Amino acid sequence: MRFTSIALLISAIVIGTSISDTSSFAETVTEPENAQCGNQSAREAIAKIESGGSGGYLAKNSQGFLGKYQIGERKLLDLGYAVEDGNAYDNRITWSAKAQSKFGISSNSDFLNNKPAQEAIYTEVNTLNEKYLGSALNSVGQSLPCGGTVSKASLLAGAQLGAGKVKEYIANGMKCSSGKSTSTNDANGTCVEKFMCAVNGCNPIEKDMSKKTCEVTMPMIDAIDCSNFSGSVAGFCQKYKPFLMTREECEDAEKMAEDAEKGPRKEQCENQSFGPGSGSWSYVLACSYAGEFDADQDGMSTISSFVSDPECMNKLKGAGVDFNQLGQVQNGSYGGTTCIIENAVSMSGTPYMQWGAKLTLACDTALAMVQFDQQMKGLGASSYYGIGSTRTCGPKRDKNGNKPGTITEHSLGRAIDVSGFVVGGQKISFGALHEPLSPEGVLAVQAKSFACSTFRLVLSPSYAGYTGSYVHFHLEQAGMSGCS
Image (cartoon, rainbow, N blue to C red; front, side, top):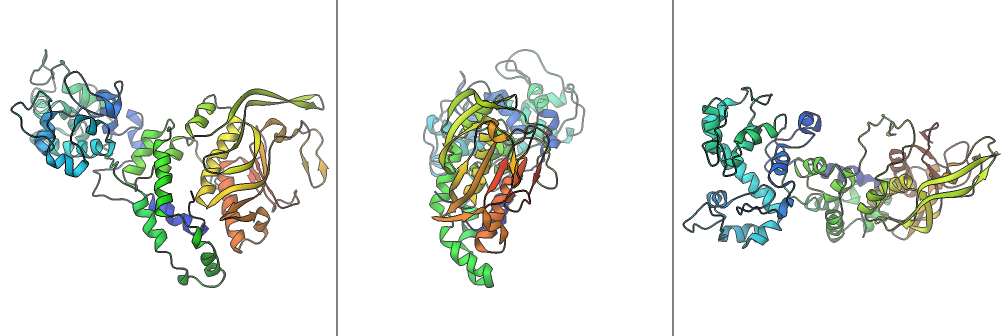
């Protein structure tokens, strides 16, 4: 499975994954605007109330409401996805020909197992509810009893229990009636106020889970014409164009990413990619595990010290990495210092790259390699060569020899040396950094930029203190940082 190998296309692909399609969502907002509700969208806040503890997309409650947003027969009838059977509220749903032709749904099971359909139908539900809310929309800006003000998002949230109940609640001075199945309460006695207050401070971020980034990126890749370039750039294009990813490879990568376990930022990342973006599961997977620290202008993270992540092992598993957990590994001693590899793992590659050797690493370093490998795969690389990590406890060294009073990060499982990588069967040496305008050099420069955005310290053949054709990826506990 390949991704694009032509470095000049990286920016085009990035643009492709963030192209907006304003016809498929109502409004997009940045995460800081949603800080009051935990950086979630209004619909996600609703989903947590409706199905957060009972199965998500597969949820079905005792009254027959279905899916992530607990959609019932009445709404499906209004939208034409169910057939009238004499009782619109018993949730004994007969699915319509429209549901079958548009989403392939002919049973409740089909609906529960069709995530894109649930998201799309819920968007239609909101559009319908907005129409039914009518004069209640005039209450936007008024104060809510729970604090904050009425918003369009909060009104739509309340309409989960019925737009008529929201209108009664507003007309009643924003007071709930008592009992079950009342003018403001549902059959469980829940008032619309609960839903309205749950999204207080949230903004509507409509997601279209049917989006497929390959439908956006592949036409861009297919349209590349090497005759538009001249000189060495044209030669570079002609040499590496055969290694561009195909639609089948793009779809395979997306399927793998969709099925993989996501990290703690899954929801926010889905909001970005399936809201204004082009719908990339590969982006969601990588983004879901991304750190939340700010980056300096040089692309280096502002980590002040090395932090061992207690959830690291789970993140490696979630990324689909095949590894052995080693615990704490003693790696000898030097100058009175014992070298210990904390939270150690052994592995010979990631789902994105083969390493050609089994390495022992601190888990955080291994996780950084997963992130780096994913970027390298996007460059068209399939494996590394000349790779090494752990060596016996000892000092740091450069072209002048050992550096007294130091301990190399290799002894602690926090550094990796790589001579080069393979693209389309051809070895690309990091020594090509000395010729940055050559076809190989362009790829090496791009790879180095990936490394510098992932690791705290990167020392390459252009570093004055080193000799040889290799690049040194280095995560430090404290002290040095840089990209040379």
